[in-house]
Image (cartoon, rainbow, N blue to C red):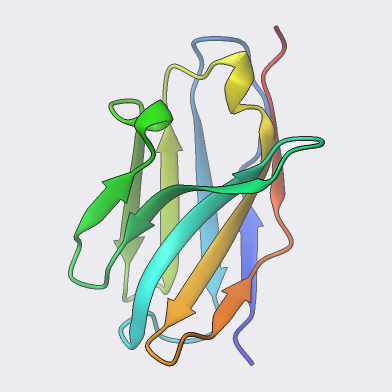
Length: 116
């Protein structure tokens, strides 16, 4: 069973930055994609950023140019650098691993708060 642990959330003012980290108990080299999702209070969970083991990335339009996803396969870690944060970025952020057999593994999430 893959275990994922997120860290790095917190309270930041508009325009500030945070770096989220996700540690995996298993190697990241055999997964299909590694992803960050977020879920604001009362809303659905949305995909924010995706990265493959080879480094191909994709982003939601709302975060393009502000967020950067990266991976350190040796350390089994996935990162999300978030710059120029806005109140609408406030949410619980979840790390997700999607495997080639379509299994999904989730962390418990880390809260990001950006006061308006």
